[in-house]
Image (cartoon, rainbow, N blue to C red; front, side, top):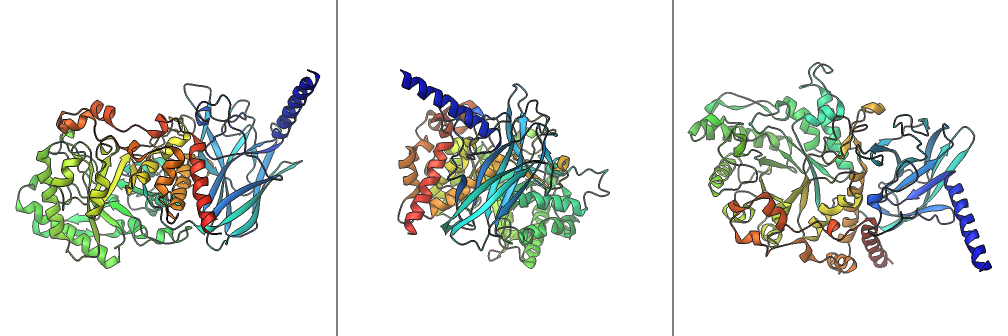
Length: 609
């Protein structure tokens, strides 16, 4: 009994010593376990069934040891506590000039319905920037910890082997140093992720919300270089995180954003593009790749972009059914093809995409998520006009894109040879496991679409879409509305289901800022890249064996909805019969994906012995 008391006393003493140590310096947490400002972990990120928070990462001989492939990146949460009211600065050091130590301050967003905080927005730390606890901008009562997101980012020229880095916080009287050992692995992250991770928005609203561009602050915002810069900066931010970006350049009525389309003049046979100046100013660097020249992966054109084409532009819908409509339409598209070819813009998919619905009471048919057979002839007619305008041997890549839902399965047959880029409703897509192979075998492109999870949900939910796409061998996915974090994203944040990026003005920054969810997605895409490199193995089967997730879990082909015509379905019908979220169903958390990452690294390390 005495021995047991001594043991308990020692354990209590050890715990007290650990608390004292924790209160005077750094703690390190895996990327999936978000901290709160009081020294805890956001509870939705705990492992399922756990009765206590996960433990901080164990240091090895006082060092944080990180494994990272060449051209890769590795991330952690760093927590720091200093005496209340003491100001401090942070500096970083690296033993190799191409190992970049990027540190961001994590912004804690307060939930409106609870006295809890979740970190999401990431603010780059400026050289010599003075910080303080509690944070002077966040104004969190009784804040005990400052949280930072660490990216150890390897650029070209870093060979396999050990390197070192250091993060140092300094107050007026004391320094807190975190030593990092970086084990660069003998394999390389390739330039292109194995799947496309795309982000969508509508019009130019993002330029105003992310950059505060206003008509009264820019003399002529429509022609201002500031507008072109803001658009290109947004593309660059997503590109830095291995993602792509699309902005729909017209409204449901067919009215176009004139800043995002060439100027068209004349009517009937005289209708042509009359001015490319602004279009070229905005899109030229994106289409020739020079906008990304200073990036980690170098200059390369964007993957794709929506054209302003819709039933009202470049031909007036009033002329639909008359020869004049086709003449105007084909004249302008022919001008586009010639201009793009002359500029050498041959690596980007220029997408004809319809975003309207009949219920908006402008056009008599559904261009988006079509439900009725009578809508198909419109698609066929537009396809015929597109083919008439663009020579069959053109090096310019024009694509007819359709975002399909209700009738996707029958439209794959009725629109064969017309639509060649399919973006499928994720729920209905789960009814038809034959679609990925069927469409890829005939040369069509295939994505699914969905949304972004709220930052208040478990962080691992950000991986649901990319994991599903990769496991089902689908080419990519698009998240709708990802650049609108809200009117007040820092002090009245709604969870960010429509915003993965944030404005930087209140921090004196004129560029958009990333969020933690975007970083998490980037890291997962890197992991998929590594899994793809495993030779002589079926990586997907290896993942299935490791996790107990079967390919059949992503499909639900024999559900009651498939026995009815799509016109008889309701949204409830689709929801009830779609394959369910595996992350929610299986209560997956961060350890699930960290185990998959370890699987990929172990397999590749074994292959490089």
